[in-house]
Image (cartoon, rainbow, N blue to C red):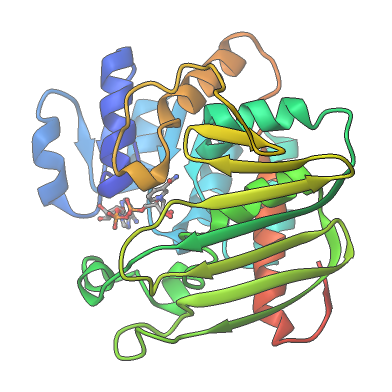
Length: 315
Ligand SMILES: NC(=O)c1ccc[n+]([C@@H]2O[C@H](COP(=O)([O-])OP(=O)(O)OC[C@H]3O[C@@H](n4cnc5c(N)ncnc54)[C@H](O)[C@@H]3O)[C@@H](O)[C@H]2O)c1
């Protein structure tokens, strides 16, 4: 484990249960106290060289992902990295090159793809043409949330606001269902958190060429509301709610083992399923579906949205 903050602790608990947690690293030594029974480190390079693990989980702030991924892949160590893959356009080809040259795999935690309702919809859409996919993320993030860690709310370290952090999963699902647009237009603004963040708390993305998608996202809502996604095909309106799907108004209850909810409800419950799938792909030497190229798609969309300033831009 590299980074055992909010989400790293969720990964560590899952790995511990699987009997696969061999060492933990965090620059904040106070976070290491609860891992007294295994080797702990404050430097990820030292840990990686000393432990030679089969897999590293990267659960650090956004700006560190690219460097840590490339370091581990260059040593042929499998990497499971938290989202986003990276926060700079130029890091995408460097990561993809490192992945190609490595004997190891790269997987990225876009775990909502494993939520049972999304698995159901992806399968349902297999032979259908999607006209458009629309998503709404209305969540509540406070000044205290942004002050809870130094990297949050800063352009250099978070890379953006609601888009690259909270709404990334939903935007990823929109493109997963509808496909990648060629051109988008977007606007981002800070409507409610001006005194504590330098990134956006509100964003709209609209595709203008290629696959149809629309995203509305805000961190300024009074409470965390459920994410809503609607997908339109020629004959169907599919509405995805947490744990349920409506097709032309008829309720479907997708099966699937969503497992216990780890971490906050709004993360979704599928970290455990994604981690199991990643480890299975290593053991069976099969492709892990959310590799560098897959995880780069949503990053390309987001970084293009930041460039757009209300004008059409290529993705
Ligand atoms: N998939 C999801 O649903 C989900 C949910 C929450 C967070 N995340 C992602 O997980 C990542 C971490 O988020 P968080 O909320 O856990 O943040 P956090 O601040 O709670 O944890 C980050 C940890 O990394 C440590 N760290 C910082 N620099 C380090 C370094 N150089 N070496 C080792 N450790 C270092 C920090 O001390 C901290 O303990 C982010 O990329 C975030 O977007 C994903």
